Length: 267
Image (tube, rainbow, N blue to C red; front, side, top):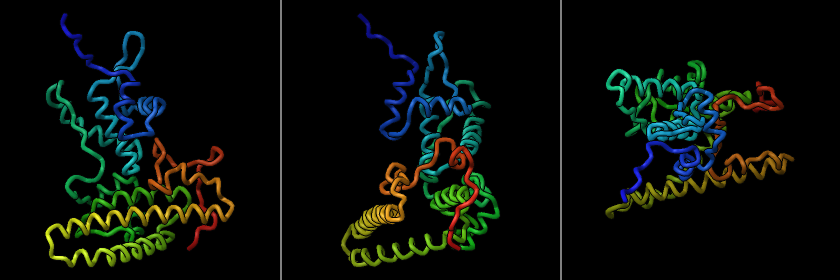
């Protein structure tokens, strides 16, 4: 008896099983939302069930990573996908687009001003302000891989009325923490033993992780003392994993209204 041939498609529950190791928050509703927004177009069985091919799963991984790691709006992700798939469409119909990892720009790739503006969804004016207050630094005429994460977070903060000038304190705190970490690993860097450089980098990463966890715990504790214990910071991943973005990249809402100001934001 011959073995049953493998199916060329997956059901939605099988797709979830493949994705959840890397994206624990993925759900059926999230996948359906992405389909509604036109970012994925799985085939349908005669009975109306979704059928996902390998290319559909790769596309989902790309979208979810872009949202999680870079907070990209769906509009920007959709435009990037269109550019990636254009060469495949102009060649063979069977050509398969390749979706790169969204962990960071590949090989420390630098971004031009226009690329950063498009990827982060910010304005030229906001980019200029972020540079003026020391939150973004250029390498010649380009920006490093970390600039995208900084710019994307700054864009999302503007939904609460936070301006670039308000973020000077955040920058100063980060610089003090970095100075502390550098002083702690300096003795390792001075060693001439083989592997000292790698050990220093690994130790710095471990210290940075602990400092960020401590920072999140302190912020959560301070808000609890201010009577904001139900702010949901742990659920939002602040204390352990950093802030998470919404699924669709839209501005946050309260009571059905978009937030346009941050009362009490310090100058």
